[in-house]
Length: 160
Image (cartoon, rainbow, N blue to C red; front, side):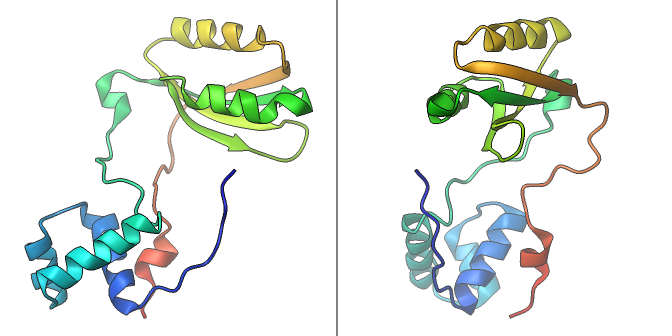
């Protein structure tokens, strides 16, 4: 179960977060120089932001389409209620599942998947609907990605 709580971040914390969101992880000395702080201060702040779970990982943004994963789909799943969390956890370990969302409405779970072929997607969907707690699913293919961004621009552009 994910707990959500608000933490107090000062101006330096926000500057660090904005910088690494836009530019990725770079050397602490370089970041310290850019923000006008000592490397030890920046290092301490990064450790704090990591320990609070605000910075969850440092990663590259990849264009999976250019790597051959051209089939993207949104799959909505209706699940027997007592098995929702178990199914969500199971799906989170699937290698082609990029996101798992616990949602409200007619469907209980939404997942985003990427595959190299329609055949792979077809096999995945067929194995999914065979799972006992799955009552119903609906798959929508993505024709074109209009926007896909892990960042909230309002946060990155906000002045403080």
